[in-house]
Image (cartoon, rainbow, N blue to C red; front, top):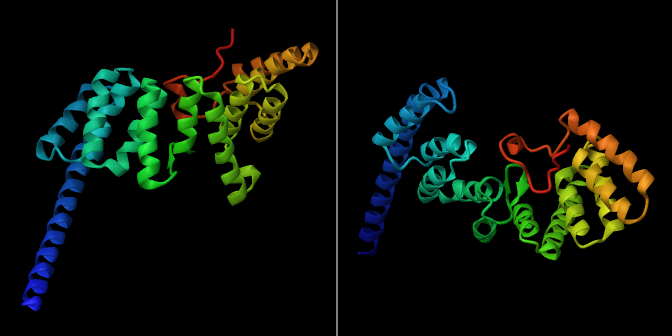
Length: 263
């Protein structure tokens, strides 16, 4: 009897696995036809982009990647009410791949920081402190904390994030943007000298980092070092005019928190 049950389970598992493999192959064919040879041949914001993806979704509405690709141009046009429900669909069909992406969108694009924190905390709980768009989930949680004026919480998370990277790979592997925001967390708590240390570290790795120079200059002014501050502000403005600002790929679509608008 036990042998019969085991054999039945084995057969069921075998055919179930075959069905999944066959479905994946079909989905890849749909992606190739309607993305690689369809939408991607047109401009990102074109009607043809959307039409090709819609045709693919009519064939299989469970392909999470199609939902994400349909949402992307809408999000980059700041049409969040249209784009977010599509990202929700992507999360529904492939949570592990797209829950971190939705959290990122909520943080950087939509600026719904409480919801972004909820999503990123869920990501950490389920998958560990992994990376999304070059930064850890905890980095983005810290960014949200900064935007909610929870500066001590942001400082703690960023400090831990930096220590983890240094212990694993060394100081040169720390992202200068992470150091910048660590400095911002200290700056907001009026820890002027400590903030300057972090901004200096960021500039050491990214010598023309205009935003770091701006906030360092403000710290110097608070320490009554006005001459140094004015020199640094002039230097930072020149760097900014050459495009040397927060070095994130999506910064062309959205201003990042504390990114300086130079006048």
